[in-house]
Length: 194
Image 1: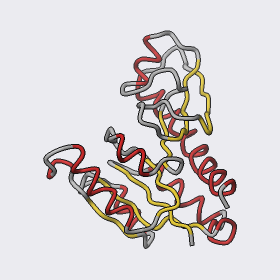
Image 2 (image 1 turned 180 degrees about the vertical axis):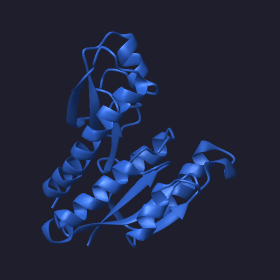
Image 3 (image 1 turned 90 degrees about the vertical axis):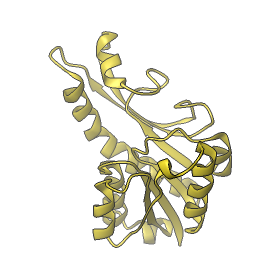
């Protein structure tokens, strides 16, 4: 069985979308793959509750307990590697990863970003899109590289920016699309790497 490890920091809605798609589409039979673990850097991440209810192994590594970003990433790699992952999926994992971490999982580390990359890498994407007068916004699934939010693009979804949108309204519209494209991109990755 090929293992998928998902990293979260909060509610885990993209993680939940992937877990549900894996069950609905029978990834175990189709791709010989399963979500084997969900790991968070925050003990109060609500997504951990969902993962536990689904019978998925969970772990918490508090990044504040480590002296450096490198020390945290080394411990995180150890926790991930205990599950022998075929794929590591960042699903709202709010940490910038060290080059050593990215290199360790090169070619098998995915992220979703709430903008149409290469536009608006980093934080506050919805506010920045509105302030720039964009007519469209969206989300991007990409492979992770050492450069923040700049890896090869695997999937994108586009939504209109409406005249009365604020950050929250736009974020909610984009998130519904994230829940569609992220599981699809993970499935396509699994299919391509059988």
